[in-house]
Image 1 (cartoon, rainbow, N blue to C red):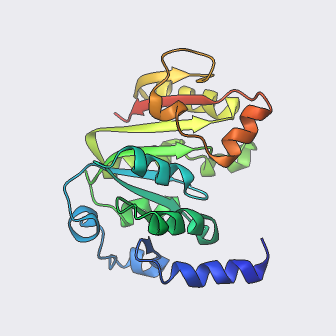
Image 2 (tube, rainbow, N blue to C red):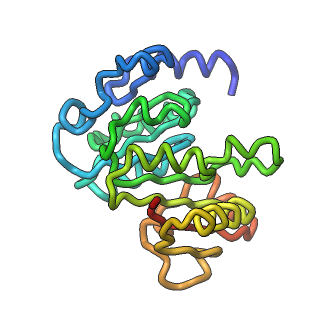
Image 3 (cartoon, rainbow, N blue to C red):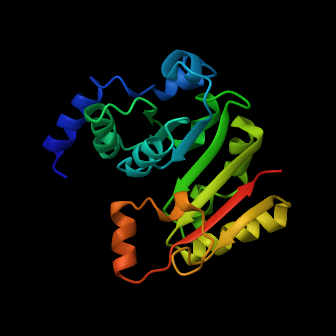
Amino acid sequence: MGSKNKLKRFKENETFGNVFQPSRQTLEDHKFELKGHWRSTFFKNDNPLVLELGCGKGEYSVSLAQKYPGKNFIGIDIKGARFWRGAKTAIEENIANVAFLRMQIELITLAFDEDEVDELWITFPDPQIKYKRTKHRMTNSNFLKRYKKILKPEGVVNLKTDSEFMHGYTLGVLHGEGHEIIYANHDVYKNEGSPEEVTSIQTFYEQQYLDQNKPITYIRFKIK
């Protein structure tokens, strides 16, 4: 994507009522006013709150919002020029139960209150295979601690990935720390009984992986 195009998208994001872009300083100074008030202030209902972490173009967040009108969805990514597409689609199609938040995932406890979130989706994260990149893996111990803080006691996490490495690594962390694995499958399209929200929604990149016959893996778990 050219820098001209990126700038255009950044500018357009600023005009979207469903996009929030707090600065790191605002978050660290505890001045982000939506923290603890997403339902009452933005969504104006008491429906469950679901986050997609590293939402990319926002396709999954938008599709989930269309599929589950009784839930609120927020796609989170640091790359605003990417989720511009999802935010624009939501506005054009009048999908009111989805929003987008531009920030780094490591700051998530500064944007959401304790027990504010019902469910998390992590879709096709970078597996960060090199050992020195372990701290960036979105299912490592430190990230799980952050997720636990914002999730309700019965809150669940969904990991959907094309990376067997990420799938195996996450299962290892979950087993090692005694978390509750509700469902795990290393090829959701080949095995029967996969949850419908996992197989009925496909991102652009997921379709490419499937065309290459790459298995799509999935884990649903609770953080204890």
